[in-house]
Length: 491
Picture 1 (cartoon, rainbow, N blue to C red):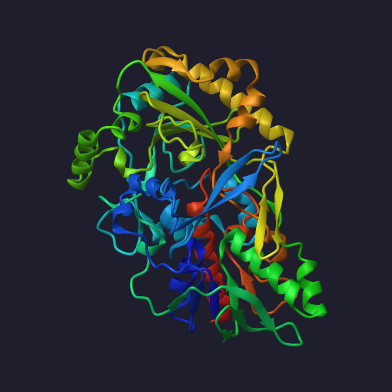
Picture 2 (picture 1 turned 45 degrees about the horizontal axis):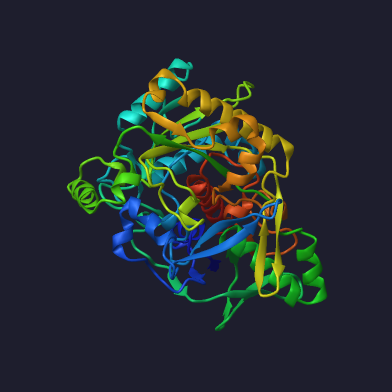
């Protein structure tokens, strides 16, 4: 078989299937790894800011108001898991329910995969290691303010009920942990620098192989695991280049429709005094060195994550379902990831990010010449704007509580947030880099593409709903469940 995509889903699938099948994984990436230095969790942000983005591709997504926001794609083996999979969140059974129903797997199967793949025990091999973030006085004030609003301390992995507490990151003692950590012995081969141009079929619609930019690979099965962008692009290219019969079958699948992404909205805060924020540390060589030494010695610091340290799961509309995750970040910035030309703000500060877990807005992906155009249509559904308004109001009250207010010099753009929250939202949201959808309606409960034998899809494009505020574990667990089903049905 050929698996297209050596990323979050593809490597999990290949690792599980390699004992039963002759597996080849192809990936368009030319690089097997990025420099060791960036494997320290906090340093991954530096990759996004390099002018010569060798390991990450940046593209602009157009907002409905004409504003462009950045979207980043991995160009190394391991995909988004190695560049954007640090914050860990499982979600809740209620949020997983649509997936469980669509793909006919049980909650116990899901938990079994979870326990096989993730662990807080650093000595366990071939697992994605989890570790709690380090809290400082701002985190403690944030949590006390939430407790005052009747949000109890709780587990930030699960979002079954409202709660707040320390973030969990995919990190070992010092370095990041990802899907690469799961692989022990690799019986499958990875071929880099191969671009999938067309899936090949016989006259009966049976998959017989794959045509790439360098060679044609024969296979009995093709599994698309290239992520939302990659999988939709391969299928749309195949439709454009195939004979009429196959082209019609693929076009009828409506590939690329219904994609979604989490929006990320932040409130920046400037503090009265230094609080050990990344704003201060980034400007002082000795502070940088001291922080790095502490991290390398295994002491808990902000370097164990990518800047976020504590969080809360909230039910903002009081319907009994967790609908929002807010996170405290140990920095403030004028443009996310330096996209506006600036990095951290000049003065000490922190920020609170707001992520609605189940947005209503949906968009599409479609071929545009040789590339693909991504349009999630952020905020196109009115409920998403109204939800963020409630989130802004909640966070302002949190910041003005007795616990946090004593640290605050000013809340940036507070007047605008209060008087015209919709403008603030439209002017300040960014992508959460959590694309899902685009192929969910094209596959059956076994992830097999309708009317095309031997062709399967399992990656973020197969998700028909958000199961958590971060899709890293969602994609991994779905891929593992798929691999188990595939072995049962085809081995």
